[in-house]
Length: 224
Image 1: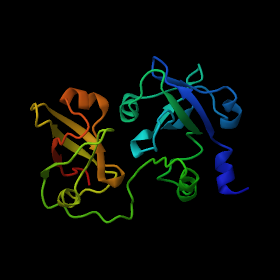
Image 2 (image 1 turned 90 degrees about the vertical axis):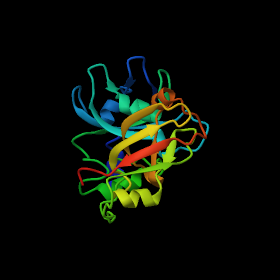
Image 3 (image 1 turned 90 degrees about the horizontal axis):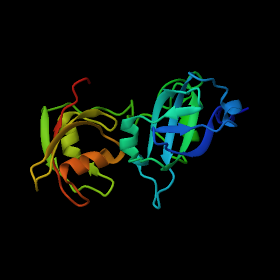
Image 4 (image 1 turned 135 degrees about the horizontal axis):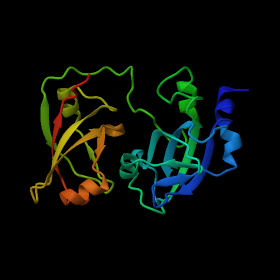
């Protein structure tokens, strides 16, 4: 049996809707496939499946949690914010027993298992461990860029290099709406395409809409 086949035998890929208490129900028929029990740790991959457009990096997320006695898994706030999920939204979930696979970015099967999910582009960690990190030449830098409808803003390459940042890093950003002066300080992960995402709640707090160009102060990563 190939490694990919063994991986497929240990996962459950189904659809569900987010409940009012932010849980996702796991179909009982998946228990035989998963071989998990209540309170077991599982890794969950969520993919938005009710969007009438091509999937973007922020339409999917990965996290660890435990399976409840009622056959549910919790969807944490940071994941709900990233996917902009609300009660009743439809998602596809991929669930893997926590003791089977350590993740897509660690362990001996990482390369083959990442290939398995290429079709859905699920990523556990967007950092490339072999990518050379630039030497930071300054502690902070300011930039402006047009915000997309999903809240994504691209961090310019020269800013990334000056701050010693690479894709996958998480650092602090001070985001300001120049039109009303509203300001918010948040931690953001720099995703593929050197993008950060200002989630729905943050956009509402700042009064930002598609096409706005927020002023952003980025800090160098402190724990390199």
